Length: 213
Ligand SMILES: [Zn+2]
Image (tube, rainbow, N blue to C red):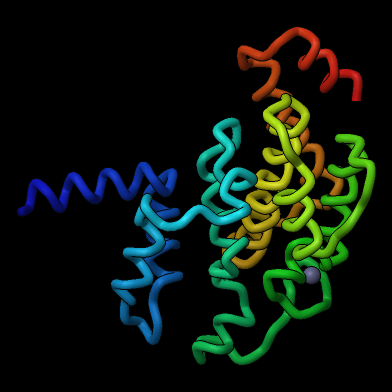
């Protein structure tokens, strides 16, 4: 039994893209400090029914840790301040990126900080439309971003990387008192995607496209 538990642990860590992510998932499936086994089972079950955003989040070119944070965000499971207040763990809501109140839709991307980052990404990748409304963005990614082309995959990577990087920036500000301006965060995201493409085995025309932007 012990062997099996260790095997499942390793599987769960790899599914979540790291131990910290697994701990975050377990936390997100807890109510009043008690783990909800059914919620955890559903979250880890590979047989769960396919949702419309499955490919946007889990596209194979996405960084696994970015997919995971985006997966929690899309289900509104990240422990944002509004959720901590509902659990009685905090009593005031101040976004650490601006002067508003923190919740999922505020962080992605209504907040003036994250709005600046996301609009710069949309500009950089030549999106033909612009929106900072989470629901509109998810619907567009699910319904309109079809096909397996390089540009589509990079746009999925851009969303998951943006969500991950903004969540990380928020945590750095809260737990490490370190802050980066929006422009620097955007440049870091761009650098991440650039280096992934330039170091990967992509066609010359795909590399040229991203360099030309
Ligand atoms: Zn904010």
